[in-house]
Image (cartoon, rainbow, N blue to C red; front, side, top):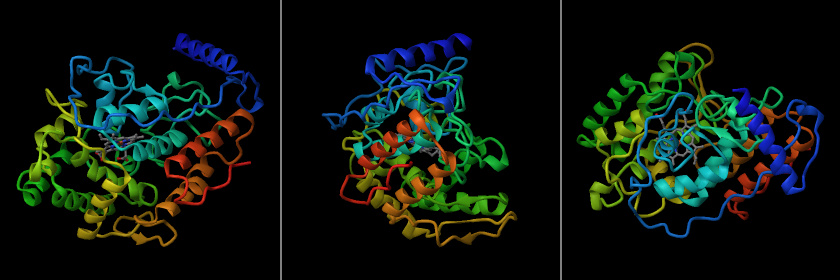
Length: 369
Ligand code: HEM
């Protein structure tokens, strides 16, 4: 552990010196130095379908200490070596890997990655754990920020997941076989045995109703409200072999789904989607799921079955409001008072998040001071 920590410090110092940004900051005394985070990588050039479970990307089970978490997409990329196999990555590595490995559209890849990294990653070392907190991302920032990894409940990870339990009810980051049984039965009932859009919409609603009934502190507010719907579309977008065509292109076999959700494993000879799924493509599908089973953002009030709509929380189509709310509420709560290099790194990451929106679409929230 100590060795890893020293290595991170040494690397950060080296990087900072190379970048000419060697500086000290009194708010992060144990780990004073880091270069400003580099800009996001450019989009990948070739977005056609291709073999991604290839000889260069074999599946290996995670080793002791490797991080895995609530996202079956990132877990799978790590277990196939599209991401570092230890599950600790930079935003640039994630943005490239989700495009290369699954053909996620560049806009969505960049937005989701920065949204996750800003609240769960270490902004000074520029490293994010795709699972729980680890000292391999460097010393944590001053509380209430935590750099706790994607498994940290609250800011990004949330309730009513498809295959993971609510944090209040226990384990929120590992595969839950009982929940997956529901995935199978809903697929049988609504999708003729496959997880298709009809099944995805029905399961999204069923998972929300289950949380309303069992989790007194259930919250379905932006940005979790948005990611819950998007993540219901992701298995169809990304876990179906890209060589499938016609109606079969949107029908996911639950046995294949289980490989991704439980074992972070692509089927043999798996091809990524034949075209990218970015914000527009996922947005259309999210809209269809919502229209089939509409529910407004809201929360329980400390007792079960008390779900109440929260009119202050942005709705699905209010993407600019979701971005603004995320910065002003979610991020601000974690970083009420950042200073020095931490403030600079935070603002840089927020800038990259905004860039991922496409500069013209929404007004940018001014940098934190
Ligand atoms: C781009 C960077 C990404 C980040 C930062 C990210 C992060 C996350 C997080 C934190 C969750 C947990 C949310 C929750 O259930 O509370 C999640 C869930 C999920 N992610 Fe990702 N993800 C990313 C990309 C992907 C990709 C490329 C895929 C598919 C290939 C994917 C598929 C999913 C699915 C299906 C879930 C829902 C799991 C469930 O509810 O059981 N994600 N992701």
